[in-house]
Every structure is written in structure tokens, then in C-alpha cells.
Image (cartoon, rainbow, N blue to C red):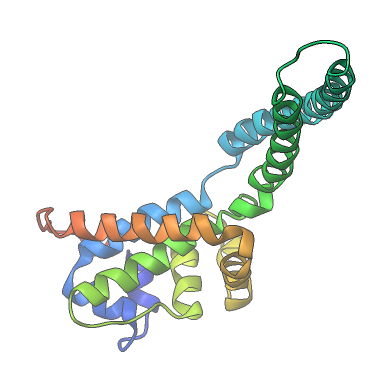
Length: 215
């Protein structure tokens, strides 16, 4: 907080939040910490996703092929035996369903979709949280790219990054714009917005605390 106070512009959205309710900035600090957290846990999760995806890519095509062949043979049997007239069609429908599911999972398991490389989802939550809080308190405002960059720099300083690695400029934040603009991220961005609204609503019910500026 000390770094942030020393570098934010007096007329900025961050300065306004600092003057009016520091609970908001401490909530944001948690999101920024998540944005900067080590990748070890994510690597484990991604490893499991990759293995699951690899197995499904192997099994589903073989299953689809078997279903289509079985459906064709069952149709051939219809001229010789009394058969279920809808069974072949159901097998073909199941084959199509599996193919569509496999294609959908290629999107769902795409690491870039979740912004995991740089965790841009957390920055999206920060932006939505500030916008939601400001609107709820009758002063609609949004963080600028420069303010977002300052938050990330302050976070780096707080967790002990070396001075050579602390500086974050607006170019580093452009990934958030691309993350939001990606049509594949529409659902996850909507969830981020709902989560931000939930956090803002609950923060209003929490007690005010006295914070030390030197922290």
C-alpha cells in the first residue's frame, strides 16, 4: 500500500478509492497477488488437463468409429431379423455427440482461453470489481491501463520482486484487452463479472478496519 500511495495520481480512480474506502484496495491486493502467484499449482492442473485430453483424443475417435460400424451392420441385419428400428440411428447420434464433445473440449482445455500464462482473468476481475463498486456508490469509474499497471507494479514490490523486474507498463496490460476480446473467453469473462459483483456486495457488509499506511 505504501508504494501505491506514493505513485498514484491524486485525481485517479485509485486515489479516490484510497480516500473513500481502503477496504476496496485491500480486496484488490488479493486479486493482484493471485495474478502474480507462482505457476506450480497451475502446472499441476494443466498437466492433468493435458493427460485427460490426450486420453480422450485417443479413445473417442475409436469409439465413434466402432459406433458407426455397428450402426451400419445393424442396418444390414434389418433385412434378416426383427430389429429395433431406432437403435442404429441412436448409435449414429451418439457418435455425433461424442465428436462434438471432443471438439468442444479442445476449446475448453485450451490454456490460452483461461489466460493461465499470465493469469489475465484476475485482472479482469479487478477491472470489473472496481467498476461495480464505483457504480454501486454513485461514482461510476473504471481503472485506466496505467492504473492497472501501477497495481501490478505495487504488487510486485509488495511480494519482493527485484527492482529490475517490478516496472509494469501499459503494454504489459494489453493482454487483458486481448483476453476479453477473444470470443472463446466470453463465458469466463461473464463469470468474472458476476464474481466481482458478488465480492462488491459482500464487502459492503464487512466492517471498516484501520490500516497502517506504511504497510
